[in-house]
Image (cartoon, rainbow, N blue to C red; front, side, top):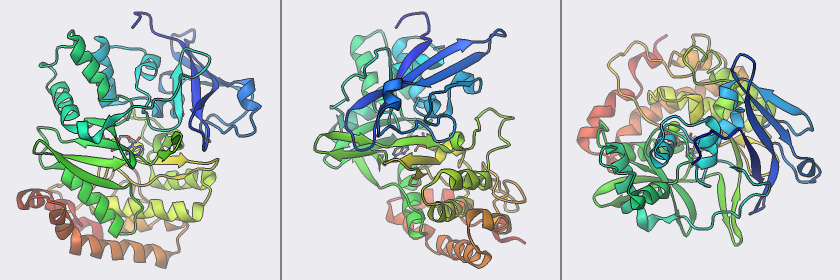
Amino acid sequence: MTSKPNTECYVYIMLPGETESVTAGRFELTKDRRGDAVGRFVYGKSYLARANAVAIDPIELKLSGNTYETTRLHGLFGALRDAGPDHWGRRVIEKHAGVVQLGELDYLLNSADDRAGALGFGLGQTPPAPRRKFNKTLELAKLQEIAEALMRQEDLKTEEAAQVQDLMLLGTSMGGARPKAVVEDDEGLWVAKFNRPNDPWNNTRVERAMLELAKSCGVSVATSRIETVADKDVLLVKRFDREKTGKGYTKSRMISGLTLLHADEAVGARDRWSYVLMSEELRRVARDPKKDAPELFRRMAFNALISNIDDHPRNHALIAKEREWKLSPAYDLTPAPQIAQDRRDLAMAVGDQGRFANAKNVLSQHTRFLLEEAQAKAIVFDMADKVRATWYEVVRGQGVTEKDAETIKSAFVYEGFLRE
Ligand SMILES: Nc1ncnc2c1ncn2[C@@H]1O[C@H](COP(=O)(O)OP(=O)(O)O)[C@@H](O)[C@H]1O
Ligand SMILES: [Mg+2]
């Protein structure tokens, strides 16, 4: 890698139904007179001339000949930031490059071609051929070993070429903080999520159980399964932004809830983190708001019922397989056992009383989720009954130990949820 950070790149996109990318436009990262980062994006003329051209993002980068400019997010547009790695992938790239501070563009340019969504980045005017080879599920044991070495960091000798190559095998571009890799089997591509040595319970089995529990509560969730390699459990979540075809993979565009909300992650910039606002924004861009807004309501209620306080906007996404956008299946559902019985707060506001994970609060803005009061109440109270009555058998059915079930018990339908 060169020592000077890159300041320009081409943005590629895989159009709906296609299995090869085309160049969508050009992105430039500069500084203004005060030294603050400014990002500029412009769609290419030949891209705009395509009958099947689609917008990279339905909010900030609508299809037009305009030059778009942003000073938010270190000059990155939300949709570009969403395509980049986050804590885990950044660590892989830094370790690989032997550098700790890279420019924002370097992370995009150095991440593998398995990032979420349909975008790609490069220095060439034409996109490289799509990646055809992926790690196989059969290689999970090796991938897990590499991920564990990176978690132990000190054991990892990046000067050894073989290990540097190994690191890149992990694939680096999916977001999130947990160790992960992308793997392929006959059905398609999966996000493989590994346990961490210091996890207080078997996260893999608990997360899989939460996806199943959510499904039984009528939430639309990502397909998942568990693979056990070398005595360790790995959660495989089917990628909902990829579809296997005879010619290769198609890619759906994807933006995070953060981008949908025009929000960012900085502490102090979280006033827009809200399910209510998210529903409003979703209704503006979704093909079928009558389906998606109530679905978001269900997820909010479910998160409150399992004390999933990690329900931040990057754990929600919109996808577009064709031209139009919809809410993605739910993913990354984790219970957080707590002692407090009076009040628990989600990461995003749910109603009139802010982030308070409480039935009355969840119900307070039901109209903004396109639900009548009676419908909203039925969803919330039926779900509360279901979670209370079945969480234990669902987690045990997924192989969660009695001890772990006991540890997470206090996460489910805590007292304050039903308090008036
Ligand atoms: N099944 C999936 N298909 C496509 N993208 C996914 C899928 N699951 C997660 N992602 C993307 O990967 C990111 C990280 O996954 P997540 O499960 O949230 O991991 P973490 O527990 O590390 O936060 C998500 O924010 C989302 O952008
Ligand atoms: Mg996450």
